[in-house]
Image (tube, rainbow, N blue to C red; front, side, top):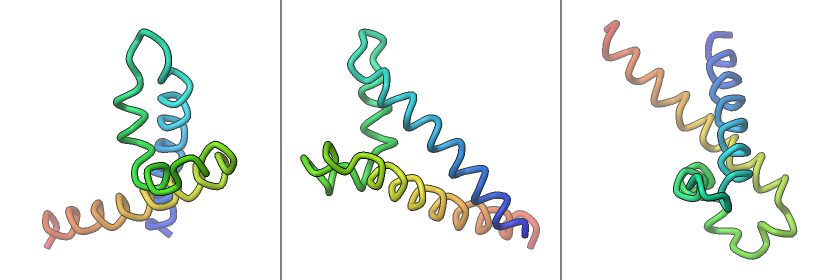
Length: 82
């Protein structure tokens, strides 16, 4: 249950941050670097197909980030607790 809560929280935060960075990537505020970091690796692999398949690529990317971050969070917590 705790794992699902952590995963859902990371997925939501990453999705919102990724969308915000993507929306501001072409503005003078400079969200392009943040967008590239948050959209890695699926947008880099998809290339020009990401334009046509934006939402599936977006969701898969957030799922990958949430899964990796959840595993990392649990490993760090086990080191501190154990």
